[in-house]
Length: 241
Image 1 (cartoon, helix red, strand yellow):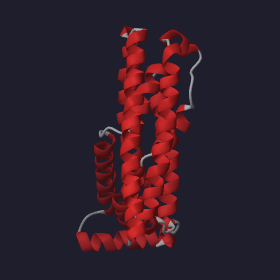
Image 2 (cartoon, rainbow, N blue to C red; image 1 turned 90 degrees about the vertical axis):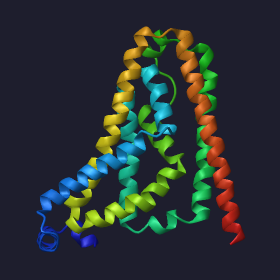
Image 3 (spheres, rainbow, N blue to C red; image 1 turned 30 degrees about the vertical axis):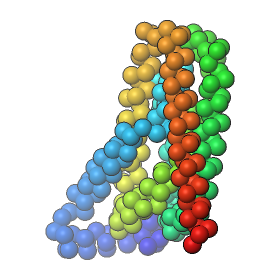
């Protein structure tokens, strides 16, 4: 399979075979891969989670570009994970002990982020934040919040891996098409969220801003407790088996 990722001849052979079997032109199939990847990723992005919570917080603090930069970090991590899945990492990520360790580590990261947000609340003002942004860089936040969510890894080890295996029939073109649809959905949604939040800053008072940050920090605490609970369950299950 790996040879197809770099072989043009292999891609041409596969696309011809695909057309014989399905009666559909390979370009149409690739468009379908892109479209379904986009819709599936968008449906996941719409669900509340650590990345969305931090996007709201950082957009109110730094402005519109916080959202796209967070997804740059998220995308860098996803690209690395796709490469690892192509190398055979998928089955290991589905093990209970791995899930448990990732979940507990993620819980600690979320608590650390939430504590930092709570500690910054007394000194927060919109005017000062525009001049001297505080906290982790949005790209780093995107990486940390993705790593903190064990369900993100499981999604890639199951649904994402299935898409990759199918896309590999079209070589590098197929994998790139799949990943492009996926990451563009993330950029579209989180950029829209970031734009809405940053535009609202002009109508937001410092008290409201502090309230938004407090709510987001509380959300991270809730996620951390949930991930910690699930992590303990998975580790207990792994130890019992």
